[in-house]
Figure 1 (cartoon, rainbow, N blue to C red):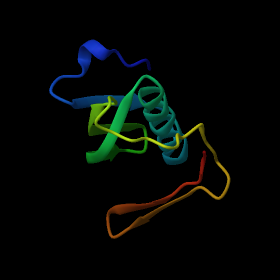
Figure 2 (tube, rainbow, N blue to C red):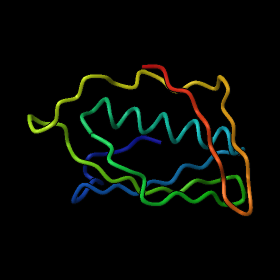
Figure 3 (cartoon, rainbow, N blue to C red):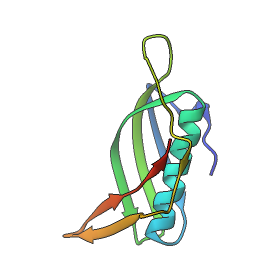
Figure 4 (spheres, rainbow, N blue to C red):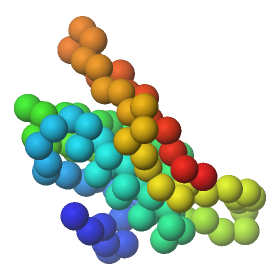
Length: 101
């Protein structure tokens, strides 16, 4: 799934990723965030993330375009599967992921 800057409005983006398996969903979602970051999007937070039947992930991310008001000193280069954990606890997911910076 490719993101388009035309879909970003008022520093808000809603995206849907369709893949089978929670770890694969998480990995693809995070990879798409890295693409946004590399295109100049500065992530503030994920305001909503929903995994449905372990086949789709819907998320809303909030942020801003990087400009002179931000001092960004590092960047995420890649997402890794190394030590990735996804656990469902009481109907919610606990996620651990290591990123390559």
